[in-house]
Length: 370
Image (tube, rainbow, N blue to C red; front, side):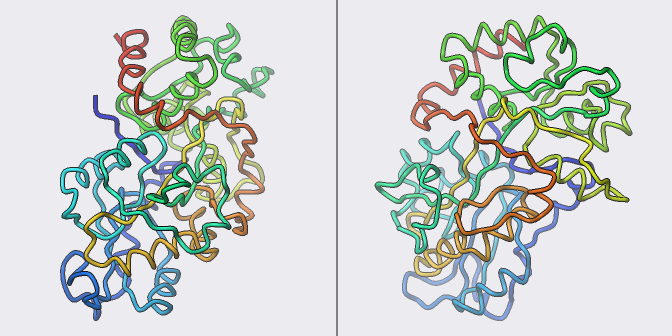
């Protein structure tokens, strides 16, 4: 089973295009002396190469500031979904394509660490990072960079028109009142789908989650391959769903989806058209690490320091639609006004995920898909 990790925090059709740009590529040219990271350790190369999934994005002025402060120009190498990018780095372990890898999350973390992919480095400013995100705190092989919550989103208008309270928890989703309303992504092919499955494992245990999914299936849950189809074609609350005349008012998406629905709407509404069932959320944490065998270790370390700097952390929300991990970073008003606060997200230990991920997905598939 190959688990893909689509890390786009999208919430409207227009966002797909907005996030499709390669924001890191134009960071400089005169110092880009060679392909990859260039040179050898200590060679004085002024290019540092970041290997990432397709959705890494940052403002040009922020990356320009990094170059001005450190002398290093950032070059990005995007490699598809995070799972695909991680697989490629594992295959080239010891002779990496770049200096830093960004995008491994807690669902795949143990695999990356067990493969010896990263060289330990304690990033400067790590004390400012929330302790509960430092899942490799003893060895510092990876540095937490952002968090995001996979949650059920709901169409506010549908529930208001039906005079029905929207669901708030996993338990609610299995109730008769919400029959044939939920669409989710395949846990074997989609990151949100996998995150939602892990949320149910956290809520009901390794045995109880199967009984829960039997209830969801009996209650008419619809499963599609990926987020784009679920959100933009099946979900009645999204801009894309409205155009497609979608009929499912519940969808597995992200806690950051409502703010993006506001951001890309013209004119912008005073309230978000969608809401978040905060009792259905699974917390994802994304990490970056210095690749073992990196040609520009010094530049890689400087970049890791920068990824958790206040400047970069405050730039992320409206570029990648994720939450900062630095405690001194402030969220933009759009997030605080229209986003959902998830106080108690579901979590599963990375080593438990690594041990059971394939088994859980196979069991889920036999219950729900086949």
